[in-house]
Length: 423
Image (cartoon, rainbow, N blue to C red; front, top):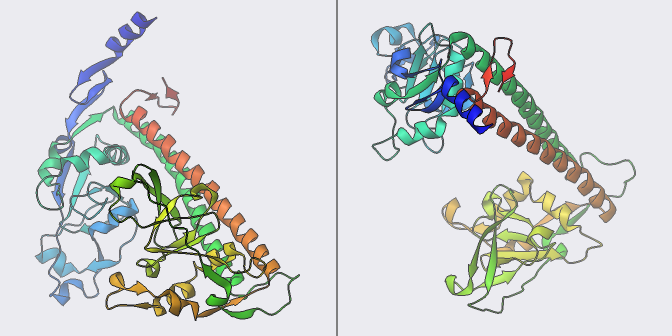
């Protein structure tokens, strides 16, 4: 059986600089199959280049939209005539040659006629290359393209690198079939992303309504009470009895109410500042240095018994019949809570301000009866769970698409003109 497979591979496939690909595919440099160049930025001090412009002009950050269908900035006929900018046609592929974070190496499909800035490379495919195919191929090659960048602090890519980049190319009909297959997956992913976005907005609106009393359940009619944080919370400290030979699981809290995460595990002798405390399920953790950025969160069962540094304050409900600590956790995600932590902090620069817990305890918030708190928590937890399930589905779809891209764009799986996958 193995000999038969090897024979079929020798007949149907060939070795190339890009590895094994179908025998009827070709390996070409981008410069051989497309026109490559870069954009430009008209002088900003020339108002006649920008005022009442009618031609779209795109900065590099637009690459994150993936398919670009609109612009925020426009240039004039004079700018187009007197500067080195070019008006590019629909179907042009844009590649970010420079950019912070993950921007460099990303590609976008131009769905409008537009001009671009100098940090973009444009790729205008020849007639025998299907733009959507080349877009998907370069998107699939993102990490490899990023690795080609050299020079400068941002490891810039240049037009020569783009022109020399190798691409495995099937026939034009197969290019279209591959692109159509991947576009079908994209539509499914986009639909799910839109649903997640809508659900997030619904959850945020629900939080604002339920946690402030603007919207209430019919069965609850008692007035909410103004309660100081000092009357509802108490600090807890469980200092670690130090052992240099013990392995400590260390946790931190993400900014923007992002929850807890396991940072690392270290032996006692590896930790310089020997000031750790045990966190228990139900503890609400507040970062003294990062609370202004939303670094607070509830300790769940997953993190029970793990350790936090002395830069965190752990609080629990003074009376669990008066305050549900999960309700307080949801409260902490509201803009008003962020503002209160700012009021209770001191320092010159926001990145260096320190939280004053005693001042915070003097501040207050509106608190509903405990039964209403629990009902609100249940509703918001259900909304959060629904979002988690949708996000898991999206992650699965994205992973499946990555696998499909690899198989289709290397020819491991072929697509016939009827759009049927063929092993």
